Image 1 (cartoon, helix red, strand yellow):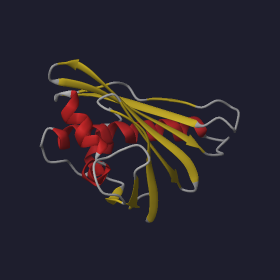
Image 2 (cartoon, helix red, strand yellow):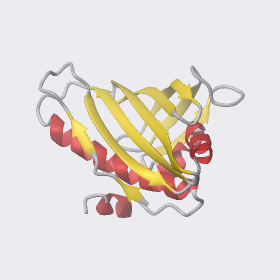
Image 3 (tube, rainbow, N blue to C red):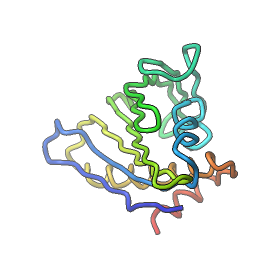
Image 4 (cartoon, rainbow, N blue to C red):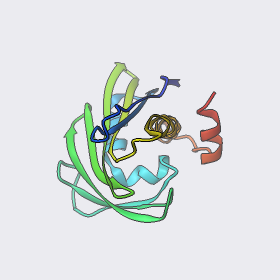
Length: 172
């Protein structure tokens, strides 16, 4: 497993979205990783903040497909997800609202070998947080790194550790 250093950025302009990203190399071919990731029903298997995700359509994932997701953290709530972009084995973008703010999750996939895939997860959060935005983005990036570790374990068929263990290891 390879984790790149989480990155975050936020400009002082309160209209600029908060941006956080993290990346991992998963020891699986790009088709297997994309297939798993694009079925958003798997979100609860690798994202500890999600309780359940249900497709609201029949058939395979596609652009415009919607899902109802139950979030367990930071507060219990239901969200509506929509696949905004879906390019087979390359890009998945999911639009939603997080705590009342528009969010876009982007997953870029790149085959780095026959049996390894780099996944870069980027979050653009349109939220008015002028004070402490850099700290907020850094914390988001650390959480995203922990989630990517869980994604790797889920894709390769290993059990996923508890969220407490993942978060504590993401700051080393």
